Image (cartoon, rainbow, N blue to C red; front, side):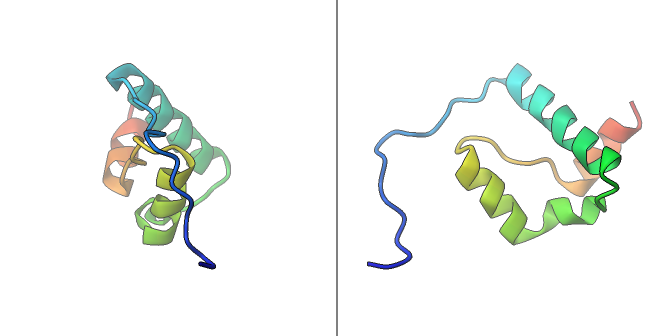
Amino acid sequence: MVGERPQHGSSVIETTPEEKHQLDLDWTRVFKECKIPTECADNLSFRKAIRETRPGYELPTKEEMGKYLCL
């Protein structure tokens, strides 16, 4: 059926806490350097796209990004 996503079995990528932390920092850096409003991090379509790109990883929320920006 058109629009259906093919099943890939167990294609979920395990993300360790250390990898999640680094990915969160990397995404926060991208938002800051590109002057993307952190509100975009809470956009459901954007979050879905990230989740589908890397199953097993959840993008930080704008509040979580704010904490990283204070580091």
